Amino acid sequence: MNYLMLKAISLLENIGIIIDGVVCDKATTNRRMWKEIGINGSKQNLKNYFEHPIEPNRKVYVFSVY
Image (cartoon, rainbow, N blue to C red; front, side):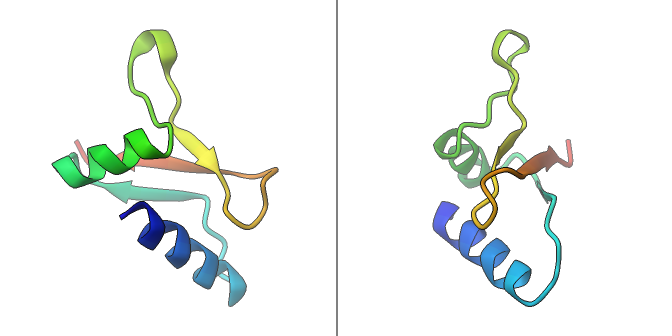
């Protein structure tokens, strides 16, 4: 799942679509992906973004629909 999301972001960026965030629900597979890319929702260690796969100086923010 992580690979597919990063590949999709890369392909979209390569044709000129700017990706600043992704939106998904809290399904088990999505929460597993968040963990793999370092997303953490705890108050003590909040991190709602990951490094952009094409431009490391940019962030891609993760949003949950719940």
